Length: 135
Image (cartoon, rainbow, N blue to C red; front, side, top):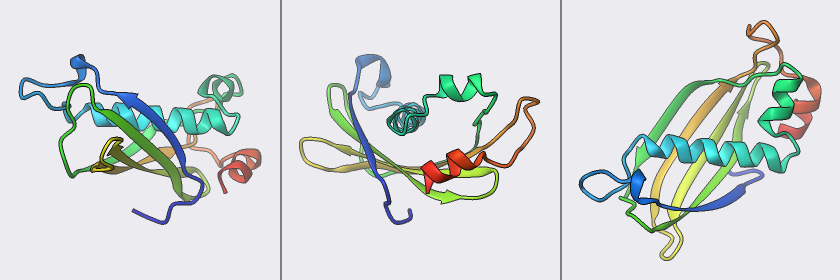
């Protein structure tokens, strides 16, 4: 995990449907939490996915990594922190850290890398206006 630049924070409560038979958050749901963090980070910058798609700019996830540190359970309030940790010509990398609100326990940390695609869904240089917002 790299240095935290502009950190965006959201909170969510663990819903029953997100837990497994053992009563803890099912591992794949953390990638959903990462997406929630990314989506709201972009919205905070004034870039909701819907406006990017209207401009035919797409950002599919090309890599995702997750390191589990402690379990989260039903009804926990989780704090999802998201920040940009890397920026290249056609990719952006987000770091994510999820903690439990009441005791600040680190639950999971991870990275997602997204590629910039153009109208033809081909890799493309990131538009300058996005680069400036991400830096």
